Image 1 (spheres, rainbow, N blue to C red):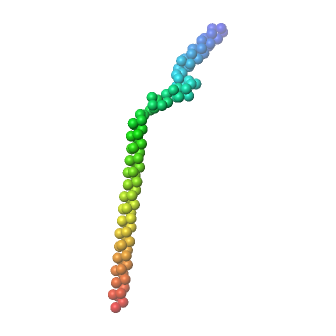
Image 2 (cartoon, rainbow, N blue to C red):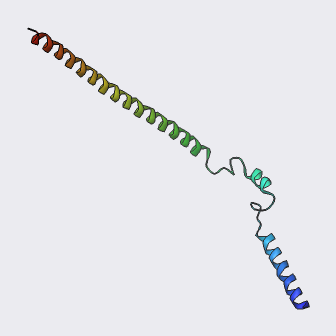
Image 3 (cartoon, rainbow, N blue to C red):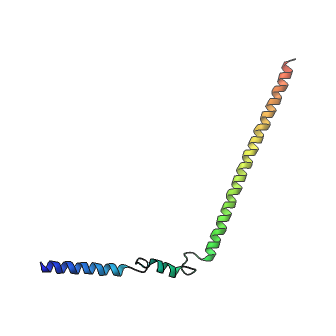
Length: 103
């Protein structure tokens, strides 16, 4: 029975030691200290130049979307104007036909 208790104690101690050694500053209880130490330019995931380029690309993408929307609205307006002109022309023809049929 003592051998079983001893084996269990050794196993528990071994697992505890392995668990403690597996903890790195990133995973241990010092997360905030690790993060604070690595913040700033050295800890950034992208460089300042990359961030500026990303910002420029986002601006250009937004401009492209605005231009596409303007083109779409202009096309829609042109179609509606054409339809309105056609409708007016048909109305005028019908009026002339009505006048000619009354004679």
